[in-house]
Image 1 (cartoon, one colour):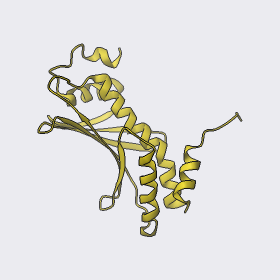
Image 2: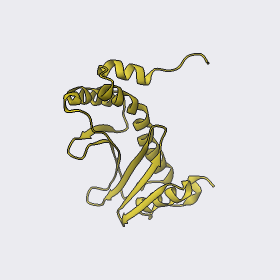
Image 3: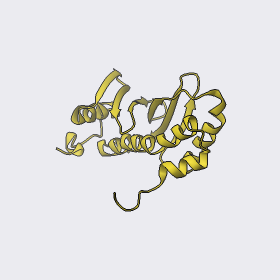
Image 4: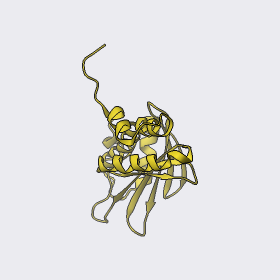
Amino acid sequence: MSAAELYLSSESVNPIDLVENLAEHHAWDFDRMNEDQIAVAMEGLWRTYSLSLAMAPDDSMLRLICTFEMDPPEARLPALYETISRANDMVWSGAFSYWESQKLMVWRYGLMLGEDQPSGIDQIERMIHAALAASERFYPAFQLVVWADHSPKTALDLALAEAVGRA
């Protein structure tokens, strides 16, 4: 069954209900916090990512954050912030930030909704997968900068290089 078939019409469905159905459909670990928030754990290539999706009814926005732990040495923070800035210049569907007090790398995205334009399950699934893809794509660059003392440019070049040929 496709994700779209989970709901034939999602016009009056809470977007968090759609996320819960997606999580059940894909067998993702999740915890429904309340009517307007859900937490999901998704296994990636590099690590398990924590996603939180929350509906903000006052501004009709579905907010997504995807986090993973990162505890860089303080001396590497300026290089990490430069890497984040460079990475954000390369993406259009969200942005990274680092929450130093929580020791978390964060991917944030907000989906504006309207009363006449509700969210669809396919749209929400693409949003979730885009967050995971961005985190997976840039994770190696953040690690190279923080733990291997690479420059931000070099780390991004190495992490995002396409493999050519075959082994």
